[in-house]
Image (cartoon, rainbow, N blue to C red; front, top):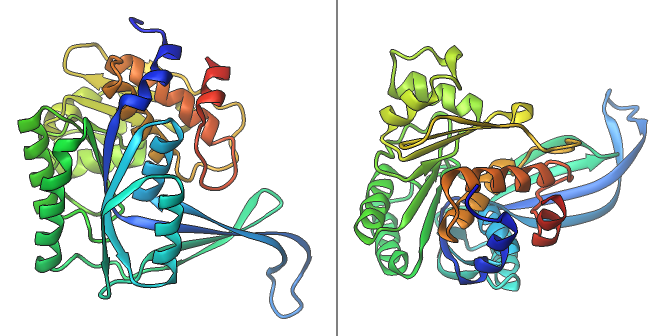
Length: 324
C-alpha cells in the first residue's frame, strides 16, 4: 500500500465527479407485522413511517456526496411528484442538478419497498422503461459535452431504463479519453452495450458471468473470477473490479496480478445499493490519488458498512475512519 487510506478522505473535498444515468426515487414504507390477513395468506403491515432516498444513478451521487466529493448528475426526471421529490433531495444535499432534464414523456422511476422487522416484505415499481428519443439523446449529448470537462471523474450508471444508450456511452468514453478523465461503467444484465475504452467496470459475479457469455463467448463463466483478466481484456478495460458478495472482491488491472480482497461485512442486512457504493468509493479514491489496489480496498470497506444497514444507505467518512 503506497498511501494511508485515512489521508484520502480529506482529499475528497477537492474531487469533482459527474454521474450519468438512470435517476430513481427509492421510497420506503416501514412497519411491523403482527398477524396474517384473513383475506389471503399475506402479512398485514402496520405502517409506522415512510421515507424517500435517491436511488439508481442518484444513489451513486448520494454516496459520492456522503464522502465529501463535489458531485453533479445528468439524467432525466418526469414532471411528476416523484421527480419533484428527487430533485428536492438532490438539491438538499447540494448535488449539482444543472444536468437534470425534465420531460413530460417519461414517468420518474420509483421503487417502493415495504420493510417490516428488518426484512423487505415486497417491492413494487412505478416506471416507463424506454429508450430516450433522438431529440432527448441530442439534448443529453449537449449537456454531457458541456459538463464532463468540469470534472475529474465520470460514472456511467446503467439501470436499463433508457438513458444510457450506445451513442451516449461512446460519446462519454471518447470525451473522457481526450480529456484524460477517469471513466467508470456499471453494467446492467440484458442491456448489451459496448463500453470498450472505459477505465473501470464494476460488475457483480452474476453480471460478470453475463458479460463473459455476451462479449467473450469462448470463456467458461464458471471459471470466474479466476479468468477475470481475460474478461478485462475482452471488454477493453484498464481495470475490472468484480464484487463477489460474501467472497469479497477481485480486482484485475493491466499492470498487476489479480488481487482478491475478503469481505469486511460483519452482518448483512441489505445488499441493495452496495454496487453503487463500490463504484462511487473506487472512483473517488482513484481521483484523489490512490492506486487501483488501494481504491479497491477503500471501496470494500465502504461496501462492508453499507450492507450492514437496512434500505438504500451510504458510508460516512466517520464510519470508514472507524473501520480503518
